[in-house]
Image (cartoon, rainbow, N blue to C red; front, side, top):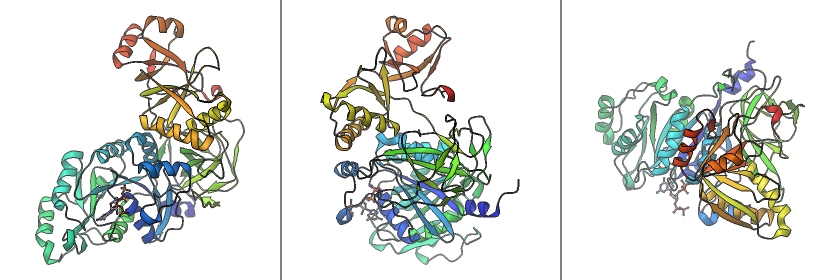
Length: 512
Ligand code: G4P
């Protein structure tokens, strides 16, 4: 079918990206400046407030403030030169990498922000690998050029050496530190090299022309060549030049894969999208959950019906929100590349696909195997209700998984997470958002495997090897092991069984 011209045009003008960086590289500052330059339409509440502007809008932002970390992801939308830009904010702390992975799954490009004095730092490296795996274009922005840092060539060299990606500078700094005078854009509108660079950088430019990687759009789009920019977010130098080239080089929303191997093109008329994040209690005054959905195809309109594969009946999407945080805003429509916030009463899960027509599932979200475990109970037995509700709702956000001990609902649940900070955040949020204190007892397990085998019997298995068998929320059996060695031993004894590090895709009819 011919694509609707409006759908095609709206898709083509969208750019959806995330910034990845090590804490303190200047992500918050750059985000603010991008919004200013783009004349932000919507400023989400979760841009980390700094200095005098700092104001706390929710308990869990209070936690962020205390620890100086950004726990939330928010979505910011602004216009620039006819482009609609969606900036997905990624949490900075490493224990939140799961969240970051999912956010990157919803992005079509990434901007890697580097502190010019520090170069490639640990967190940058980790996040870079995620982008690399996704094959999305990665832009480099070397920040803090107003300070004395390393030579521009040294930073690019480090990116190439440490991260193993070639770079192609698009802008070049004129001076550095107190002498930083701005940036020179090395290319014309048609991506030809510009002649007559300022005297001060003539030698650098000559060197780049002879020894640098040539501009290659194909390689950029495949994530094999990183266009590099320089600037100072704080003094707002180089930010305009970056945005201008970024919107021309970054790709519009592209095709997305389904679990059945088919691809969904963004210009397909029927609406589809997937939930990449769920956030409970965005605003303590509202006590609600928002599911963040990335639109992958078609035209979303308020009040439309969409199918969730495991539900018999279509769901009416009647209260989509575009503005997250304290000041919300109901939207009427959205296009591929956009992110909408859907009010959710507990029906939606991370990874869920919503689509018009025949249901299907996107295969876009990576899933994670928990590596640390704890048994938990409410400190005050009278608060058990709040405790259970909080646990249930917070686990739906995806940072922790609840496992049930076999043999009865009254036994304390076991939680699994990828990082210890997730337990801390859970503890804090349970107390502040649900009024329930948590007693948490760390368990010695390090590896989890979802087990399937015709003759698998959890009681027998526990006697046979050093493992504990629990169940996930869909009653799938999982074995928890104290080490890889124990797992390997068990696998050796039962080579015919399946040992999956993540939950199996539950047949839709069988999900709880
Ligand atoms: P993050 O979100 O990546 O963690 O970094 P953030 O923007 O909060 O910036 C970290 C620090 O670096 C801040 O200083 C910020 O002002 C500073 N910064 C950001 N971009 C630039 C830049 O281009 N040049 C210079 N010189 N500094 C920059 P702070 O002292 O921690 O906070 P504040 O008191 O300045 O707000």
